[in-house]
Amino acid sequence: MKRFLVIVIFVFLSLNCSRSNLGIKREIKFADGRKGEVTVEFKRDSAKKEIIDLTITKDEQVIKIAEVEKEVQQIWSQIKDEAENKDIAEGLIKYVYIADIDEKTKKPIYHILFFEAERIENGTWEITRVN
Image (cartoon, helix red, strand yellow):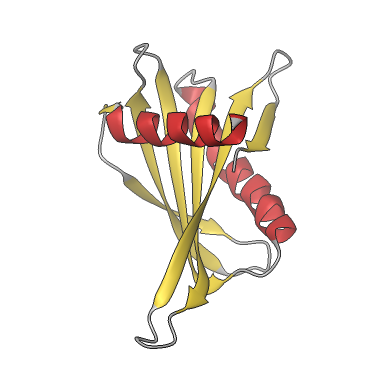
């Protein structure tokens, strides 16, 4: 139940934040050396606090969630300077990936993993998976 509420809150925040600018595409390097794009948005939450909203889209099947978590950490390390420069203390990370292929249509079925990034007192960031 708690996990469900956290997901609902993050989806609500994601949909209801007012935008301070539109999504900006950034090129990043994945752990295996390939390059990809992420979308970075700066938003204000319901408390008018600015947050960073990072969307990672990967058009490949993901088999191990542990690999996703490691990759999110590596990607965040490439983006976190932007959050720090804007004095942002929280972030929402959405990792969109192909979970399966529809047998009838042969189209990919996407799933989303949500992560929360929070700057802690000593200046480092803590990344936590919420679903």
